[in-house]
Image (cartoon, rainbow over all chains, first blue to last red; front, side, top):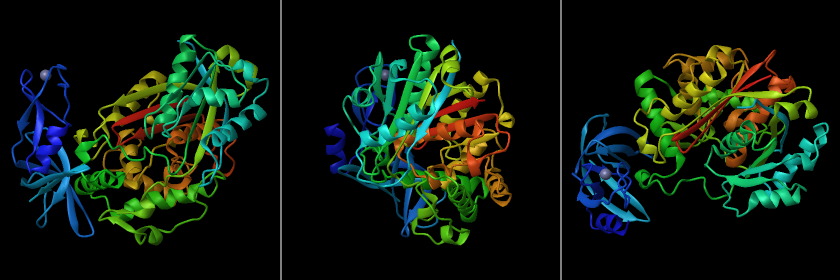
Length: 103
Length: 369
Ligand SMILES: [Zn+2]
């Protein structure tokens, strides 16, 4: 999983992808979860959709969805977020855990 | 498949102590041998342990410490529904005829690892269970207008029920105001909406119909089982206003037992957080979708103990590996008419719902007297 972590540390989100089944395997894995075949790494679009949101100490956290099936928890900048609104991945990183920031 | 009965139960006080895990397990096993007639260590041919304590060879250690030489012994771990998972495994051994009598014992300590599922990278920095709970709450509030006060009623009711449970972690009542003003963890979750990790152990003996007659005059039958895992990642829950694994598991348990929600007299369900009870009541058919809050208020206002009579996880505490088994112990006591001040009058059919990791996995059992 180091490629995933390394790329995140460089502010780049790549995810395992099965060429045969043509889908992202998330969370990342060495094996496709449909055909159990090998996967490659593929760039994930920075466009996401807001699935759900809440806040802690005035800061929003959310579940956002990339590519129609990659859902992650992340932080959300901005005001009055509503589910289904379009988001952009502002920043990602890795420090023991993946970190995603949307706006 | 052979019929399978629960014939003896034991549970410890839920608290925080210095007691080792093994001692806690043995404390829950002792009342089983004290109370069951004719039950000797030699009768037991399966010992299953459930815990999240990462302990090697635990079932064999517990067997040795309790003087049992079983044919089959091993641990079962599935985070918060470890307890019912181990019971389902024991059921399979007995119903298949591979064994006749099984002892199932679960325990955890408040500081055990495993309270948080580190594997789930999709939770990012928000790996603590309060964050998935907050997502369920946001979604349910948005779709059904559920309020913070509705959530507080779950906590008040379950803490009140726990007052009549001598084994419960909490020993004092809380008002709606107490819950509303307890420490804010997120915008829609307060400290008193949460179940507390604590120490505790619970045990049951299950056996075949022929053996049951030897050990008790009042067997409790396991008539329905449903179990479903949709994923390990919380984010694979597509609809955050319901619990897919619970709906699947309860459907199977109702089909197997030939029961519907209206037949159930008493329920122990997995209220890890207040929102869970509301969603689970809806998903298991005790009310329509969106009516869970109203049902909880009705139960509270009429002092009806049908749902979580022992106080649920919120009132009784949540020692992960023990929780599912403690829920089963409560329903057995209810169906035997031995629940004391918690007794639901005339209860003949009960249901246990135990889930884990943000409802990525659920177990449902239907028990009958
Ligand atoms: Zn594939």
